[in-house]
Amino acid sequence: MKLIDGKQIAADIKEEIKAEVAAMIDNDLPGPHLAAILVGEDLASQTYVRNKEKACAQVGILSSIYRLSAKTSESELLELVDFINKDDEIDGFIVQLPLPDHINPDRVIQRISPEKDVDGFHPLNIGKMVTGLPAYLPATPFGIMQLLERSGIETEGKNCVVLGRSNIVGTPVSILMSRKANPGNATVTICHSKTKDLKAVCQNADILIAAIGRPEFVTGDMVKKDAVVIDVGIHRVKSDKTKSGYKLIGDVKFDEVSKKASFITPVPGGVGPMTIVSLLLNTLKAAKKKAPK
Ligand code: NAP
Image (cartoon, rainbow, N blue to C red; front, side, top):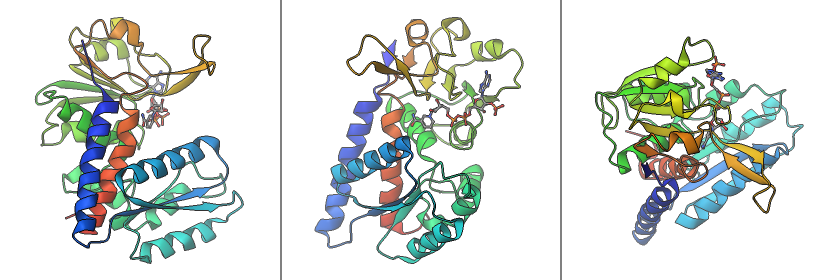
């Protein structure tokens, strides 16, 4: 079994981004600028935005955070989106989800200029991804594709099973895996809560991508020998073995599955670090082209 070291791969990509940003600045070009809008006090969202800010600083990307109160109305948020859409100094921006209940996230996402939609959530970017046109790819699926590519994993002609059909992970990664591209060209089955005999479907997977949001759901008996297993799940659970009293686990029962897999991502240190790096890559792309060509 080989461990897919997402932390190392993410660090390598960050070095590459840093060199490209430095070259832009050396050539008197404006460096990339990422903005984030954070509405409310959600603790996890604050951590995610802080981590994005830190990652930007590590590679020389300028970042700005717009912090709005949880009471901000939808129209006030949309006004800010319009303002950033027109701000030539900002190459790309994200609106951190989830938003407070009184704001419709779809209306907000659809208001983001597709040229600045570095999260890849705007329907235009999703449509481009589906039809195989260059687009900003959603961060986690983009990160998974890079993990596969940089680990030298062959995907062509393989049976790929994706567990989960969310808009941010399962559905887009299933599209990318079936695209006429490399990595891609896999035969993809996408599973969800209504799938019958999930175990049998999983046992047929050469590549199993678990994005189901259930701790240690995928057990050893569900996995074919020598399968490639990508664990997207992140769950914080109590542990008496760590100082903090908590540890992170994934959607895959690592101890069992790692004995059968040929390649597997750990949690933490697998898919997680790739998500932020993908956002940085999209921001660099936005700064270089202003719009994906
Ligand atoms: P989500 O929106 O909750 O979607 C979960 C999907 O799994 C749904 O499609 C659901 O089916 C399906 N599902 C749930 N229980 C099932 C069961 N018993 N059998 C079959 N299918 C089942 O989750 P998500 O946002 O995609 O996230 C998935 C996991 O990835 C979470 O643990 C999340 O924390 C993690 N995540 C990690 C990163 C990262 O950077 N590493 C990024 C995003 C998410 P239905 O559609 O039928 O309900």
